[in-house]
Amino acid sequence: MSATDIPEASTDPRSDSHSLERSAKRFGDTFFRGLSTGSGVLILLILAAVAAFLVGLAIPALLADPETFQFSRGQSFWKYVAPYAFGTMWSAILAMIMAVPVAVGIALYLTHYAPKRISSTFGYIIDLLAAVPSVVFGLWGIAVLAPAMRPLFLWLNEHFSWIPLFAGQVSGTGRTIFTASVVLAVMILPIITAISREVFLQTPKLHEEASLALGATRWEMIRQAVIPFGMPGIISACMLGLGRALGETMAVAMVLSGSGIISFKLLTSQNPNTIAANIAQSFPEAHDIGRNQLIATGLVLFIITLAVNMTARWIINRRKEFSGAN
Amino acid sequence: MSKRIEIKDLDIYYGKFHAVKSVNMTIEPRAVTAFIGSSGCGKSTVLRSLNRMHEVIPGAYVDGQVLLDGVDLYAPNVDPVRVRRQVGMVFQRPNPFPTMSIKENILAGVRLNNARISKSAADELVEKSLKGANLWNEVKDRLDRPGSGLSGGQQQRLCIARAIAVEPDVILMDEPCSALDPISTLAIEDLIKDLKEEYTVVIVTHNMQQAARVSDQTAFFNLKAHGQPGELIEMGPTEKIFHNPDQKATEDYITGRFG
Ligand SMILES: Nc1ncnc2c1ncn2[C@@H]1O[C@H](COP(=O)(O)OP(=O)(O)O)[C@@H](O)[C@H]1O
Ligand SMILES: [Mg+2]
Image (cartoon, rainbow over all chains, first blue to last red):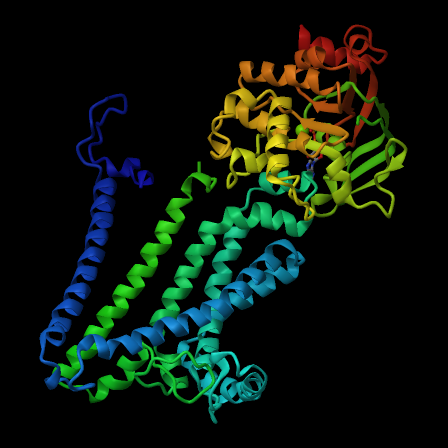
C-alpha cells in the first residue's frame, strides 16, 4: 500500500520535502486503508448474515413437535438428520481414501520425477479438470461411470462378499454410494493435486540435498525431506478437498438415488443420501416446517464442515515446532 | 576408515557450461585439505563432484575419474547412493531436517536403506556422534526437541554429527562457517582438527586465515577470465602455499588478501 504515497498525492505545491511534519493528507493511504478495512468488515457481515439465516430458520424445526413434520413425521429432528449426516461423511471419507493417495502421488511425480515438459503440460490439464462444472461430472457419473463400474461390483461381490462392505445384492444400475464417491474423488483430485504440487515445489533444495548427501535414494529423500516438510500443506489441501466433497450437491444428487438409511454396503441399491443432495432433491416439494427441517440439516452440514476445518488446524498447530516455519 | 582420493583429468559441466577444467590432484587421508580461490572459480563444484552430488543438478555431468582408494566413483557399475554414504557432506548453510528432533536428525542417515537399529544401539550412536561433533553436553537434555531450535553454530555441529553417524570415509565441507559467528566458527575449526584423526576432510573456505589454521594441504583454484572454466592452479602443503607458492597467481591471491 505504500506505493501510493507518490508526490501527486501532496496537494500543497510549497510543501517542503525536508520537513519532518506529517503531511496533512495522504489520499492514497487513507483510501486503501478504508477500502481494505471495509471489505474485511463486509465479509464478516455476510458470514454473520448467513449464520443468522441458518440458525434463525433452523430453530423452528428444532423446537417443533415432530408430529407436525413434513419429512419423517413422528421422529425427532436428530433421527431425521442422522442418516444424511452419515451419508455425507461416509461418501466424503470414501472419496478421500481414493483421491488423496492418487493426488499426492501425481503431485510427487510432477515435481520430482517427470521431465519438465511433461510436468507443465500435465499440471495444466489438472488445473483444467478443476474448472469442469459439477453437473458435467454428474452426467459423466450416470452415463459413463455407473455402467462401467458394474462389472467391478459383480466381481467384488463374487469374491469378497465375506467383507460386509461388498455384501448384498448388487445394484442393477451401478448408481451406488461407491460410484458417487468415485465421482467425488475425481472432483476433488485436481484441487488436492494442485495444492500439493505447489507445496512440494517449495521444499527447500537445502533439505533435499541434505537427505541425498546422507545416501538417500530419491524415494527416501521424498519421504525424509519432501513429505514431512509439505505435511501441513497436504493437510490443508485435503481439507479443501474434503470441504468440497462434503458440500458437493449436484453430482451426488444426479448419480445417487439415496434414501434416509444408514448402511455401509457399497454395492447395493439401498444407499444413504447426503445432506446437500437431500436438500436439493427435497426442497422443491418442501413447504412450511419442511423448509425449516431442510435448512436445519444445512446447519448441521455447516457445523460438520466447520468441525473438520478446526480439527485440521489443530493438527497443523500441534506440530508447529517441527514444521520448519521457524 | 580414512581413504585417499585421487582426481584424474576431471572436467565438470553444467549442461553446456564448462565449469571446471582438467583437475588432477591427490587428497591425503587423515588430513585436512582446503580449497581456496575467488568466488565462482569452481571450488564447490569440484567438492560436489567428490560425492556425486554434482549430478543432482539437472543437466550437470562430469568427465574424468575420481578414485576413492583406487575405486573409480564414476565407473558405470557404481551406485551414487552408495558413494554418498561413504563420502559425507556438510553444507554452507546448516540444514538439519526441520521436521525431526535432534535425535532423529542424527539417526536420519542410519535409518535409510531399510536399516533397522535397536533402541539401545540408536541411543549409543546418538551419544557417540554428538560427542564426536562436540555437541553432546549442550543438547543431551533436549534430544527430543526440534533441531531447528538450536543456534546456527549448534545446528552446523548437528549436521556434522549427522554426517559422521553413518561412519563415512571422507567428510566434505562447503564453507561450513560462512554463516556463523566467530565463536561458533572456532568451535567448528577445533572440531575439524579432531575429525582428521578418523576421516579424510576436505573443506572449501573463502577465509584464508581459516585455511591456514585448519588445513594440512591447500589447493588454489582460479579463473583465467569470466566465463572461462575454473582451474586448479597449484596444490601443496598449506605452509608452502601461503609462504612460498610456485605460481605467481597464487602469490597474488594470497598477498592481495593479506595485505
Ligand atoms: N547450479 C548451477 N547451474 C549452472 N551453473 C552453476 C551452478 N552452480 C554453479 N555454477 C557455475 O559454476 C561456476 C563455479 O561455481 P562454484 O563451484 O559455485 O564456485 P565457488 O564455489 O568457487 O564459488 C560458476 O561460474 C557458477 O556460475
Ligand atoms: Mg561455493
